[in-house]
Image (cartoon, rainbow, N blue to C red; front, side, top):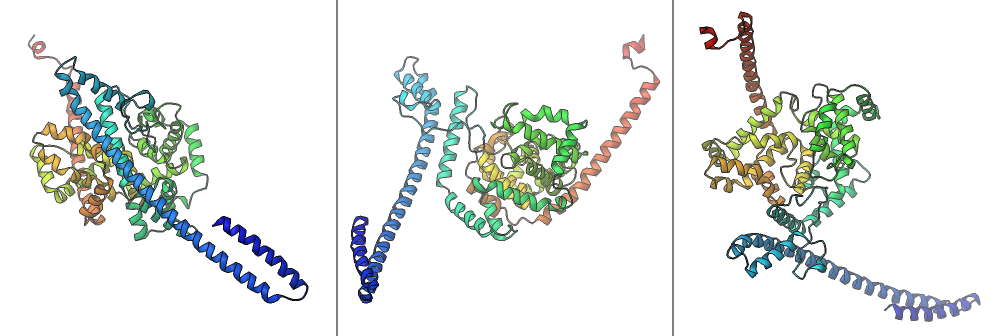
Length: 502
């Protein structure tokens, strides 16, 4: 088509040149017009044909991309099952004979599964390569030499990869692109459309922008009355003056997210930023100073935000979202939320609540940390950031929704366990086995409804009075004990019964 078009163009050009000379000579206007009409018809036909070809090519390309993604997802699923099968076969097959030929085969398969640095070196089929770190910087496979743990981690990584390839991320991404393009010349506003998008998860490429808007929205009541350089000024003061929180901050820096490359060593790029954010926050909030847990919140925020925005993210969580005394030494607000959660667990999941009561299992031993650090180190990283997306938009009600959803997701597995030690052991790791974020989101935002915020606020008020009363009673007992101890001390040194008899 293009070659033919070029030939016709030169013919037309020649005709056009001849007509031009006619026109300049004062005649031939009719042939001139007819020539251009013919040229337009031809070019329009060319454009239509090329458009059809382009559309067909784009359609075939999209179709091939869909097939490729589906095949890659299937490959991940097959390789995941291959690794599981390999782990199951390893002991039974090899135990029959130390010199069995199967032992060598299984060993080679196991070696290949764990080491895929250079596929050309091995004749055995190589599994799908699993990156050492995920997109957020978290280590996907443990550093330990335990082969079983490495295999389990690889299986989980492959399953996550498979889910990411088969989920509706593309349609979600298109919806976000359309929404953000519509707000290009105006600020984002709270609305049902944005709420639905936040609940579906923010694409990685847009998360920094969306989180900044959420934080700005929730903290504008503070920031409107402060100087633009408030954070830098605060940080400068915190560095120059003695800070009682600085010692504990230094101790906790490398303990924050040791499985994330941005915080895994003293020279990692996130350590100094984390130090600055925590120091500035401790100076702004002397009643809190520093509480273990704040380091993890700030570290997660810094993965998508600069220092100043991460500082305001911490303000959003501690001063806007969470009740008073949530991160103080008494952890009063945190204790109250655990009682509220147990009430909700008995209402939303009565069978599981009764099961825990029967075996005297206290779920708060696990859930306390969920609430304090917003599921950091409790769920896989992809799910963690989707929870944070909804949390930064809607607030603390999201924590209750997802805490209940996690238990609902694995309720049947818990009910099968008939021993308190087995239940507690499962409590410690069951959240890491949850990979299907779509199912979890459906449980959290559909199955848990209705979920009125007023109910949570009323329960908080009720339990706050009870906890305060209990703390008052404990303080009275403590004071009585101290008085009695001081009385015995004044009466003379304490001695044993034998000494008294002598």
